[in-house]
Amino acid sequence: MSQRFYSTKSPGDFVDVKEAVLRSLPADNGLYMPEKIEPLGDDFWNGWRDLSLSQLGFRIARQVFRESIPADQLEMIVHEAINFPAPLVTVKEKEYVLELYHGPTLAFKDFGARFMARLMRWLTRDDDGLLTVLVATSGDTGGAVASAFHKVPGTRVIILYPKGKVSGLQEKQLTTLGDNITALEIEGTFDDCQRLVKSAFLKREMSERMNLTSANSINISRLVPQSFYYFDAARNLPEGAKPTFVIPSGNFGNLTAGLFAEEMGLPVEQFVAATNRNDVVPVYLKEGEYRPRSSVATISNAMDVGAPSNFARMESIFGSEWERMRSRIAGFAYDDEMTRDTIRRVNAETGYTLEPHGAVGWMAAEAWRKDHPEAHTVVLETAHPSKFLDVMEEELGKSAIEIPERLACLADREKVAIQLGTDESAFQDWLEGLE
Ligand SMILES: *Cc1c(COP(=O)(O)O)cnc(C)c1O
Image 1: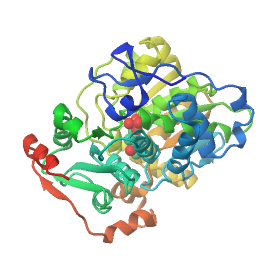
Image 2 (image 1 turned 180 degrees about the horizontal axis):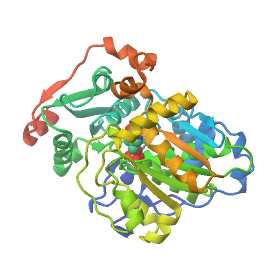
Image 3 (image 1 turned 90 degrees about the vertical axis):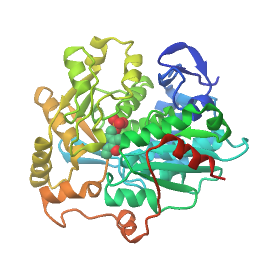
């Protein structure tokens, strides 16, 4: 049987995997969800501890996509995408960090982006013309998507980023690859970039003629590979220990992937959502009212989200029942000063270096442990500390952070970007002028 996907706004209508992945956003503005995720059977649980991460990933992806993608193709896609580890580090007894930043761009978004790129390539293998991927970025997403699609045949990527608003090395990650990756430096804000991308999709005729697709974080194919490491972490805990996963969250894609893992039968003690001052979900969990609002800027900026897009998926999983959601997910929020304190304190006490997003998670884990001292807490660390060098050096001093070679070497590469304003028709004209 193939998997079918419904929109959270019209649960009775289904599309196939190609439509869900390439269209990304349903016409009704909902989010795509798999019709059904079945628990994994004994044939999985009998041998799951001995599989490699990519074999484990294949079995999990197969459970979600079923026969929508031939097994040998899916296995290859997972194998090529997940070619780096996700180490579980014991920081203190029963207190773990799951390092998700060992991919090519040092961000956990490599998991989703690398899988999506290869899946899109396979889904369009018989189509004429290039697949054109548009992505607006305020930082990490663009770098992960650019790296994931770089030199993937049959694809080209257009990245829009706001001039002067991404860090120097982040900009280099977007602008130095060349080949099928083109960077547009927009004289405006991140919101302008997003508006421009949306405007191109709304031009139905052009969008279809040019095979436009989107690589933003709501794409269902980015969530599936994020379930893999929940299984991987769980099997690396001491025998019999059930994990409490603590997830630094912005759009809540990572947390939703954890819920998928649980639907597949992974034993999870508890989910803990950790946010910065953008605390719409922790407030909802506490009070039962969902009040999205404008985001505020923080030092854990990948989580500066005021209206988390995956909240609709979480509601769908819990049947919109607040009591059910809050029994499975605890929520905590912290400000920048506490985050900075935690980076210093944990480094001094344990020698372990947390970056701002991980530090927010660490505080939530500590808060949870106060009432649940027996918990085995696994904090997801979503980026390498060198990606937030300014903050890290302010707290831990110069030269405390080593910049990995694959990031450091970008500093000397030449930036290549096309400058554009925020005018929608000028952007569309530019797009149409491409080959
Ligand atoms: C994207 C991102 C997050 C937030 O992940 P969501 O799935 O949107 O909740 C957290 N930390 C870092 C470093 C990120 O890049």
